[in-house]
Image 1 (cartoon, helix red, strand yellow):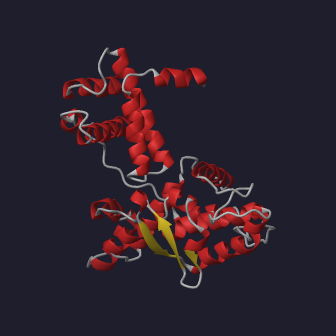
Image 2 (image 1 turned 30 degrees about the vertical axis):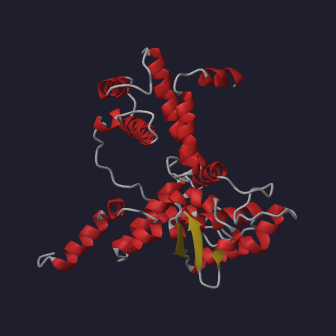
Image 3 (image 1 turned 30 degrees about the horizontal axis):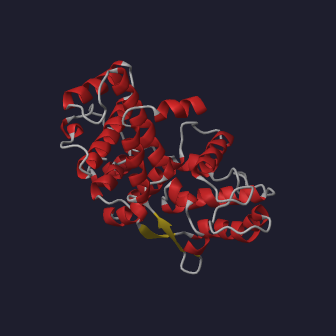
Length: 315
């Protein structure tokens, strides 16, 4: 680990990358997970520039295309290549704004075109299985004893599905930000933007039981301002939440490729399928642009068949 840090510290351009990542953390208030991904992407670019004998902060758009082309030849996924390009655009934009470079060579580079894909959602039957793993009753209705961790995990899963929160927003949820009387919670989204999101009764019941029974047991007398806490009474981080989600998915016998973000996709798709308008869903998801929310406006085959059967004169 020490050797790795020493190698990173010796990379040309590393000081600029570290300063850029610090600006992402402080000025744009991006999550530690996002900042870490930016840093990893840019470290890869710095290593490529060093191998190629280039000054990483003063390259042409043709040289950047060559870098992306080598990623493509190495069979990196198109999504990964585009993410690397996005990181480079951010870095060079920042370098340009701060006066460290005269031009942004990444602005003239286009990434590979991605195939159109629909958001991954969880079917209702699978969602029921997922939400039964830590529940007070299994799918057959048989009661079970819930541990404090079960109570927390159930509350977290119900919260994610109830409001479409990002995993980072769930991790950062403050105890004082959950209003049971008004059936709502205040979350801190991307760019430190706060929004109020409603919660339904099932989620509120699970969260209240966790708050009254599970959370005190996990805290063991310690104090914590976060709503979701770890088994040691500390704030429950995003990595721990993702690990819990994966374990729950496996316990439910579902696709191991499911992620907490798929709960968010399912929340949005279910709302729109149920008749919610696009701008309301945009507000609840915390999207800046309506076009981001529009990816959820796809129509399911079942909905198409139902509309066809109801509307076609010969159906």
